[in-house]
Image 1 (cartoon, rainbow, N blue to C red):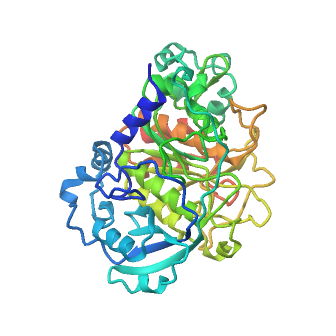
Image 2 (cartoon, rainbow, N blue to C red):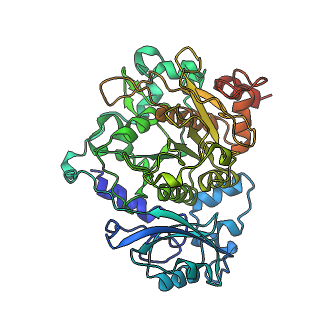
Image 3 (tube, rainbow, N blue to C red):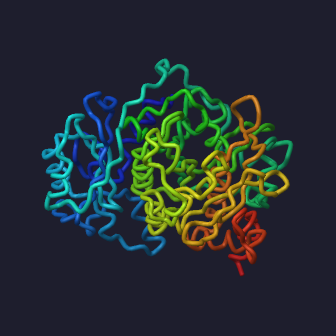
Length: 485
């Protein structure tokens, strides 16, 4: 029997992480993530420390297998993307020097942006001395970082893991119809994607990273049990608490996963059930810190390192912080935020990131990072009649670029767990990410840039984009047919 324990162990052994030492006790090429206790109460401020260079002696771009998985290297080769210095881990020597100087804990690192995030002792008063280190370029405060308690969940018992009653092999015998697909058939129709499933393109060979806020009791969800039995969950990690166990009380991540992967014939069939998945937790209900954005960056870099093709993200950053002094203003939403820069870096590595455009809420009425990234696919808010919903944000980025790129359903979304459909834009990215996986499977020779261009150029208002639904509603059949001309 496949168990959660087996899956997680295999995933951690498989995964090449985002940096050589991302927030772990051990500094090694793969940055093995190990369970660590929540932040100790004597630790206070979180600090983002940029380094001047990488000064690499430990790693070389000529030996990329030391810090990138075989799949990540192949993705670059297939898209003719050279391995360069941004792929190299942050210097282990610099990290050790920084930790020795501050007696801090390492929370995470970014190889693309060349920084480390550290958790300073509560009584540390020498922040200015960090800036004077020869290896440090600049220092930025992320405010007080606290360890937030979460409700205790009973431990997973292996016997509770359900045997899947349905396998993906049965997809080949299923009729693509309302009666077979049930609640999700509307989604295929809305984006003219029926033909992809009719030709048996279900996302096979593509890996999708789902960035969410939790995957509670995933082992007990019969509709996605085949992901365990077929070993299709290839990696998991909680980037807030530095642990491989993703069990939290929220099931929101499970609904997002089910939109792509569920198998419940005659009721609910996911949009890319043959894809492989990495599940990453990067956010938390009820709390918001600048540190959380660095967790998102770390997760995106890990996705790159293990060979992910598509990312589905439902997090934004910049307002409603526990410490309001860190809230950003609309004038800064020009792609400069670290999450936005990371999304653009991921695109340059051959990854498509599909990002939620949140709805208006109080002070939120402008594009937030990472939605303002230049090469991200931000998906806006429409209803079942393909009209922008009343609460949709309709503002460009601070530098005048159109956002979102596409319109996607965020009103009355069919979800499998809960008492009613969802009216949250958080379910929008997995819809588009799942269908992109199917299209990309059908067009295996295309690059991330080519897939993005095809989808935008064949959307419903490609010639007259606006800040409500961007280039319009995706039409996956038109995108496929255009690629063949």
